[in-house]
Structures are given as C-alpha cells and as structure tokens.
Image (cartoon, rainbow, N blue to C red; front, side, top):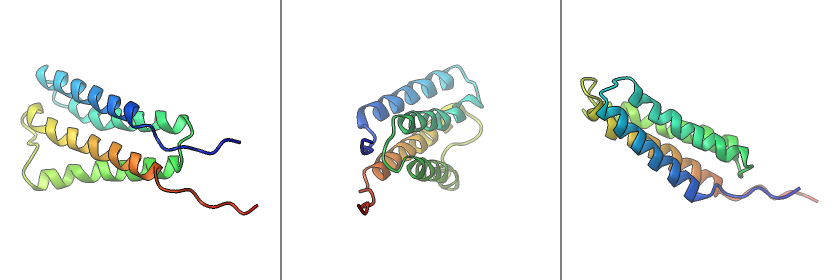
Length: 117
C-alpha cells in the first residue's frame, strides 16, 4: 500500500480559476442564485482530490467546507455581498472558495500518524 500524499496545488489552483471564471460569467448574465454554486465547485474540486487518495482527505474536506462556509456570514456582517446584485456577491463567494481550497490544501500537508510496526 502506498502512502497518501498531500493534495497537489496546481489542480486546486485550476479549480479556483475555473471558479472565478464561472462566477464572473454568471454574474455578467445576472443570474442571481447561480453565484452560490461557486462554493459547490470548490467542494467538487476537493472531492476530486480525495478520490486521488490525499492524506487526511475527509478531515481536510470537512475543514475546507467549514472554512469556506464561515467566510460567508462574516462577509455579510461586514456589509459585503448585498443580495441585490450578483456582482456584489461575487467577491464574497470567490473569497469563500479560496478559503475552502486553501484550508483543504493546508490540512493535507499535515504529517500523518506514525504507525507502529
């Protein structure tokens, strides 16, 4: 059995860039509820990395989801991301997806448990 490795950064960066392009296209088309799917795209990118057997996969996904979803109420309390415009919500969801992917990548880089032999 091969040891699990950390999540590669380049595919996660590609997911985030795709996320930014998707959010910009949706905001330009003025689809109000579709900007919310930016966080879902980040979660799908994390799930794809888990499928490739990264270290601490499910714990990293849980931490990433928690980080991404905690950015949303904090930004709304700060007055960012009004409900009127998708362009106003775009930077909030971009920051939430970045936080989710960054925390996921950081948790997969934590050292694994030492196994007794």
